[in-house]
Length: 483
Image (tube, rainbow, N blue to C red; front, side):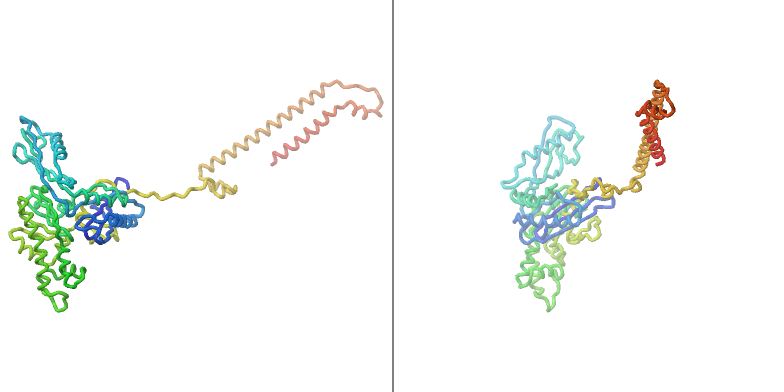
């Protein structure tokens, strides 16, 4: 992998479980693999209702991703949290110094720690994320207080809370699939980072995500999140009412996109336009009226509203926005454009959502490990070496030269030993001859008839045998030299 990190992300929604693995490149974020599987009731309104089934869905996503990635194993993943129980509560912490001092990072850290210790979530809830909104130095807003002198400082925080049991069910689902959670981020915050421009976040804007079972509302002002709430209403409220007219859920969902609101029908339609428009107006109107109520109750200045999510694909939604949200500037972004690159054959349409893409972009920790292929164990000796048929021609050049040099030295050593042995035998022969010549001989004054007998009697048998041995040794040496 080198210096590159593989980022894995998984999103749980009421309609599907989606996953993706990507890597940051100089050209942009590259998607290496994607996977999705439908949800059949085990996740509802963004809440895990059945841990075992959710665990199985996560495992299925991981297996598909790993199959596409080949020799890559996914160990952890970034996840988003959403759902019915997610909402925000504001808090503030202040400190007086008794005189002017310079604000330091240590003072800011102390304020955050104090908020962490003093903020109490409602019973059954837990704090899962904290966003700093702004600082006030002596009553004046200052977004970058470090280094500024002040006698008092106040910090405002936005605490994101969620039901403890719901968060536990979410974590248990990943633990059952043996996937570590690398980090968790608010889906609403991820959506806003991608969907809203800098100007919109500064000047007062609301992002409304109309999902299948819930509608999430987040408000931004002065480039900071100001409110987050989730309504228990979604596009499925409209779909189910249409399906009650003896129409399948699939056809009902299709009608929202193809026919939509205030459209002319024909004789072949399963439901007449008046009935369809009445259902859409009532159910979508209910969602939009609740959105307006939340915006007004927040106390924040909101000039622009951006609609996204599956429910925003309703045809002629803009007509309903004019009816129920007069005075607001509205914009519809059902399918935002992403700055990503995908590998050939990787499906991103319908899989990569704003939350999933946001998780991939926000991820900083490597989530995967390379699987090293098992190398076959090489035999210590080859078949040729075991049978003795290997030759120097098959050896590397250095080994062959070394073997040749060793063979030359061996032959020289054998020749030297043969010469030394020959010299030794010559010296022994000369010594025996000298001893023979120096030995006193007996003289017999007898006739020639006894000469041969006298010679045999007076000769030394050992000398004769030595002469024969010397002759044989000389012949053997000649034969060895010839060889």
